[in-house]
Length: 595
Image (cartoon, rainbow, N blue to C red; front, side, top):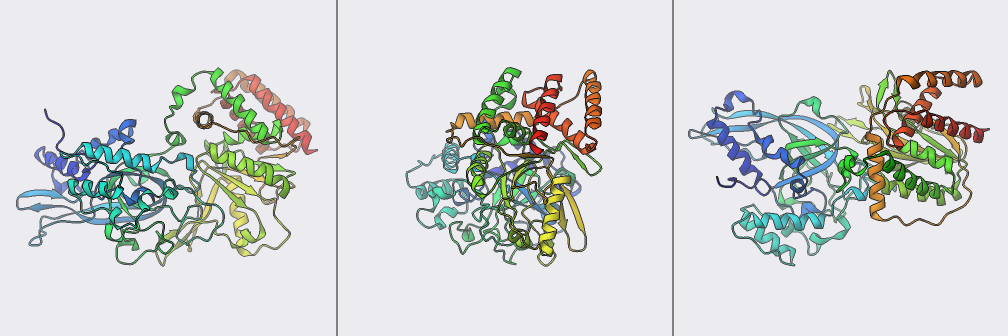
């Protein structure tokens, strides 16, 4: 039996049409199917289970858009920022007596003479952006992906184009052999195709002016994407999900954006096309298959379940990370312990308005001077360890002017993003050390309430003009302040007591990757409390309540959350008496500092 009649990587539409022809011969009826999948997803689903296969597919970003070819297979990793409803399209038509399909393409082809046999199908539109606050280490090298893609597509052609040192020549030859409509690379100015400045998308959180339609935590170099979804239940994808879409790229190479030009904004929409997004500004991706992304999907080359196999390995990894965090925090061991528990926290359940599993931390006794040392180092360290991080300055000016909550603009029928429209698992640093006396205006009061609600309930209020809706989220929140924060009442408050300023420790890429793997693995572990220990916990909590009558249900819940985090930090899925006692001791030492 010969090879496939199509190349899924460079000609995915050929695969779609080939499989459509096969399905017709097997009894598939376009007139009654409503466009339901005829086997296309099965052709491409293997990419998500085969690391060598998925690594051959270019990631669509502000750099690769300059050289990737239209109508080829690409993947886009991003957050669903807006859901734009459904659109109808001419999905299938009869050419003489033969049925043909327009599925997974923008251009609808059908005979002009008669439309009686044309079938109108439906697809969903999702406006996606790079994940706000996504850190550089999560990104693949665009140069590496480009070379791998060009090499592979060249091998799959009868006459392989030699990849010259000149990128333009390579793209010209690949285009002519693939039978494509032209490369956007030829439209670029000299030198743009190899610009190292846009090899990775590095989100900016420096407060630079942003377009009102660009997510505030996203760089202006970030590339949005209009994803068209087929054959997927509406409940399968929701707002703010982080998803990897694999599909067919379509865009107009004659109007492709120049990401290096300050006059060419990716959200400068015209009214020429649907939802005011010309394809040269916002590329389309016709999704063949998709998967929701977790932290482990951003750990290049790591297998979580095989890297950390035993409690001894967890303990060793925990010890090395604790040593690093303690050094960053001026040898404040208690602060390092609480910080580690905080970094492992996540919402794993909800009871009424209570988000079970959250564990925010407020480090006090920090001022501008100490923040410039410890705060800066810790912020940089967290960027290197966590996939999504953002910093928010809690000043009167910022609160009075910032757009924190997303709002619906019915003029454009778009959801205008706010700073707090973030993906689950995002870590937020809130710096209150520069807060000066002042008066909050109505915007400031609203923003302060939004932040407090996020901290306490892990929900963000979305303003739809005629009504407001709370959206559940999962954000880790670390507050720096001089005294106990009144704006952000954290779960754990600890006066920061460094004993010295340590020299910066140089971390190898291998060590950083191991710590990322450790954190992601610990967060993914399930956890339970054995029957034999439940009575011990109950007795200890009753005794604690009798000693301190101010303890409420939230304090007791926090101790149980800390115990869970302590267990998983050692790779344990069941709470032990030793780890419970460790939590009680840390809590005792924390309270001593508060006196």
